[in-house]
Image 1 (cartoon, rainbow, N blue to C red):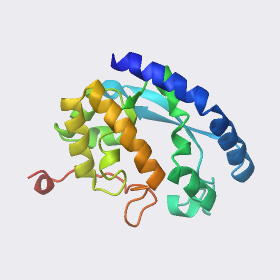
Image 2 (tube, rainbow, N blue to C red):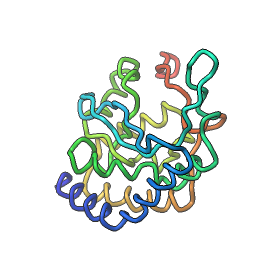
Image 3 (cartoon, rainbow, N blue to C red):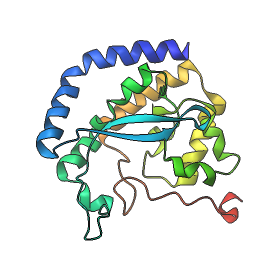
Length: 201
């Protein structure tokens, strides 16, 4: 039922939101240039990598050594608006159609985080990653990594179609209110460096 729900709702959303997707693509091309789409390998179900799609929100500015500048220096006002409205996430509907993601589930993070999870946190990969999830309606990027993973694991252990519908509706409310878009002193979340034993206790 979850897979059927994902495909049906994602297909409807792609049709309904197609004008916004097209307009966002045009604006990204105009404001930030090419490429319009940001593609990156992320861990999917059981940690298997897939290519996730998002609209680009940052410039490609580099320092004198050829390294990309920190995120907060590359995120423009336009890019911040795209993130605030969650328009950058719309392309992940194609990932849902392809079966790489679900509408609801733990957000797909970076591949390099995989070896940093403890046994409990690693449970977040027992389901397909989502465009939104239980953690996103409980603070989004404004909570600590440990709290976020607790919410992810809770979802894995309590998932149901009714819960997915509830999360989807509450996500719309969060987006409208632009709550939890950034973490203190970071444009999104700080880099996850693993959970220490003292934090686990």
